[in-house]
Image (tube, rainbow, N blue to C red; front, side, top):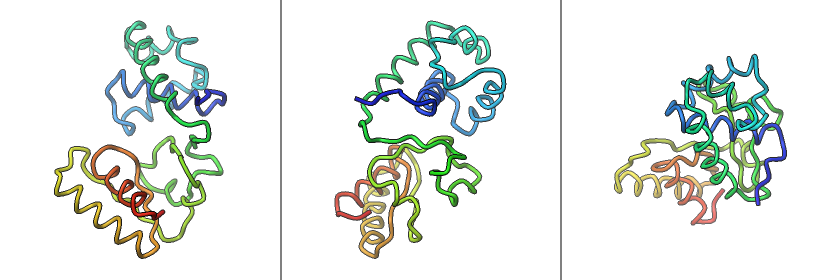
Length: 173
């Protein structure tokens, strides 16, 4: 079972909880969370600082508690050897860090070294992709993999998942 045994894992859980409870995108939540971080230790589980979180983010304590428990249940499905990497850490890919919308956290399963391959591509697109779009993505990802290019897309539903699944199903990175 996945353990919340580091500051980064707890912070990621808190951040995911707030995305769910506020409905904010990562881009919108990130600066607000960073502002909150100036006065509070965001690596302490939300339930231990629920009054402060509820007040700052203007959400009810019961709703916040419920969303935290849902997020914790989802995170507990991660594997023991899965990793969470925070932006700014030495493991965070430098090229990704330079992008305008670099995610605050990367969730890693498998060979972390693939993040540093020179020949990589991120296939991203709609989360509500049509079946035809997903099929086109699968064909493209397979062709890229066949040519030694590593797929490093996120795992959002839709195009991202189609790209990853195609690469993995065909034995590519």
